[in-house]
Figure 1 (cartoon, rainbow, N blue to C red):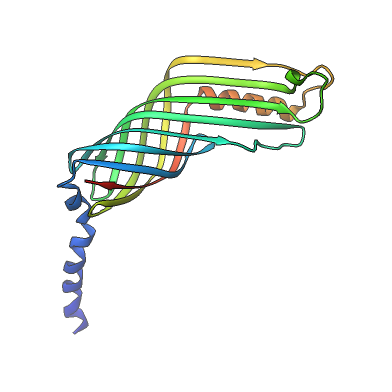
Figure 2: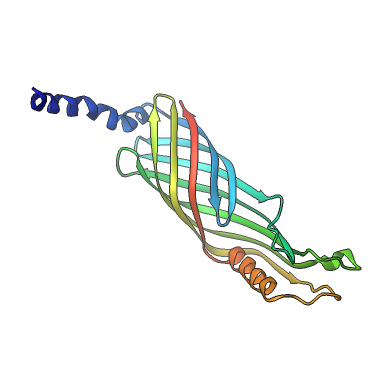
Length: 211
């Protein structure tokens, strides 16, 4: 009896598994919110508008940004970070829910490393300032599930590869009454790398509506 029920249960489950593509068939536009995600080393939040060229291709325009408001307290210094990314991409569904994302993006990165110890001149507190803007290629892989007008998903991992530099400003200022530590120098170098090199994007959780 149980063996006879197995094929029936499998068939009944199949439409639910394949429903995401079916649900996308009649959709033309969607609006999604990035609930949280990592752009480089900063948690970001954003919004995306999408146009359904067909059930397996969604063209998207989006923006995400985030700031480490409290800074990164390292004892001798603090770090304040801001990053944002604006993009146009094609979300290509290769399976029912699995997609590959490919597009062009502009990434902005601003960071300051500030000395925690007191100085006589306030401006001398700033040890390192990095400000960069790059155009590049954005890629990612994830899953998105669709139920009628509602969808949720996650881009598990992605990469931003900078290609064209629009802005690169790196300033080092050393307070006259303090000597920079090895940790400070290492952190300064890591900020420069983060602002100028390829960055990893991960765990971009989204939810939205399609119509």
